[in-house]
Length: 102
Image 1: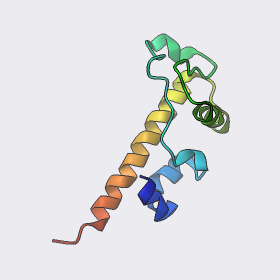
Image 2: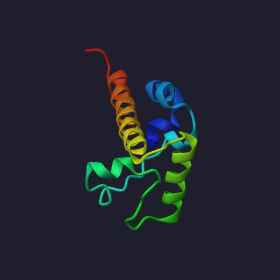
Image 3: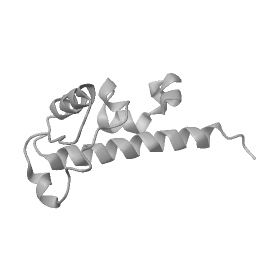
């Protein structure tokens, strides 16, 4: 993805349409996999990154939480999934567009 990003944010049409053009969008997400042990965690109203996490990653996760005005871990979870899928779709779209016509 970083190589695609170097060629311009215009390659991320759907990502920017859905999530905006903030720098926060164009990097791998931070997700508390080991903490999210059940659906009850979705109702929590603060960011929970319990597992060992470098401070810069936690800071970025908090920025995402604040920037998108998240209220619950469900909001964070949904944003993480949407972001991941949109970024991956941009990579695949670029591959499709770069193939010569057969």
